[in-house]
Amino acid sequence: MTMEQFAQRLSSILQAANTTERDLSLRLGHNPGYINAICTQKSFPSMELFFDICDELNITPLDFFEEQNTNPSKINELLPYLNAINPKEFDNISSIIKALADKEKTNDSEK
Image (cartoon, rainbow, N blue to C red; front, side, top):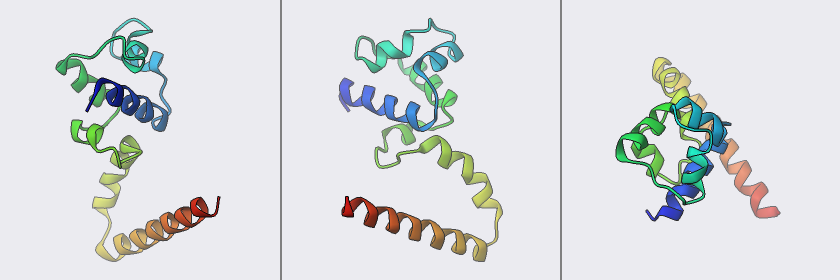
């Protein structure tokens, strides 16, 4: 992953998590423009700070690099609930999600 791809991925995760660059910077204990510097490719986080960013966004480092996962923090919020339901309920929810995703694909292709 290039610096540009890293910056774009961080920006998209922040947007999906409904979090601003400034908010994340302050939550990490840095100046308000710190995350903006990363997103604009003026800076690159240390490995330690990268892990802190992931923790603050409720994602794993693997989530960060899985670009097809467009909303990792919200998916991670749901996992404990999905793990707590019985298999039949899980199958029902899975069917609903698949139907919604198929509907979205159809809508996108019609545009």
